[in-house]
Length: 494
Image 1 (tube, rainbow, N blue to C red):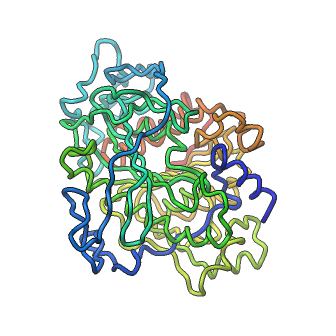
Image 2: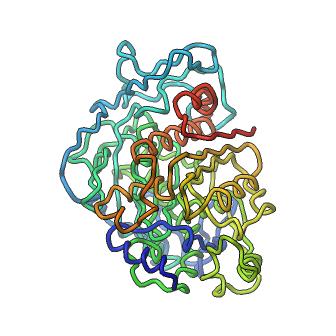
Image 3: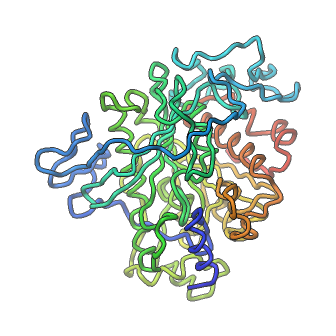
């Protein structure tokens, strides 16, 4: 085991590493185990024992399906945070320059005082939201993507959700638009203070909302990028993130074979999380009741999770070719510790497709030498790829750029000058992180600035491609990017 992997493993006791150099492995297929396969048309499991009761989340009489338990406390700590986010959830003045124009030719209105707060429980403004169709550039932009959205963010987590078909526990976090504050604001791991309110009442009358799936990185955790997931919730998205058991910060003793095996489960975890989110949205009395839109989804992730997201979005990986690349001594040998454990002929693909998938956002992805151009060309939704110029784990020229180049149009790429591999997470804000992670956390770009950029671009991209809000183009092209996101080298191909 390499010294880097030992260092990363040691750090997981504190925070969890999301490294790509030793981290991007290949989940295989989405066969749900001996209990049966998926009904591709319905997107549901057809296990031989029978499904869970979608209304209650309880197992059916024959004991199969999924087990749902009472929600666990989202996070420890009770400190209330002055985040600058209005309690009412109204948009914040983004302070754009006067010459930044919306597609209809008028200046943007970023929540000026005369706008007044958005009624978070009275329904979303009609700006092409939730229609899932082509972007309508004639619609006005009611609130900008570069400021906190019109909703408070709620957070709910359940650590004991069980997939009976795979005999696997899949802890999950959910962030969602809230209509009022909860009892306290979240503190993740007791160390990182967020802006979301634990178990806050959902903005039900404004829903349902599109569903975004987030996949964490190698030795990461569901809430590793909470600055992004909370922000998306404020903009009218439900965000669901599983812990990929066997590859989290709490899995201290994983061997290379263990890591290889858990790669087979990652895309299945994503699909199962989608199923549970939909089920919770249909469960009377659940905090997510009535707010989950099952036919509008997107996938995002960081590092190993970005690789997982790309597979979910349609790419395939050929493990025999990955083995050959390792044998030839490829510059990026991220798979080489794990490929010996895959049977000959192993192909990685997502089958069935995630229902309603509209967009992909890949943050600091790796794994090009398992996918290659021909398989990346199979991605079937618009994709935004981001990377950092100071990322030595998944470098731009070895990973980000080849992955982007292999994907079909429409697609966009953002290279963040001064960002490292961990700039796409909140991990480096944990005490001792910089001392342990070294260069991965020694970014020229501050964490605050990194998330200003990441949040703006991700939110605008999802509102454009998932919601059909054509006005979002103004935040995804010049003059806005040149003036407000000058650290970004941006490419947009339609």
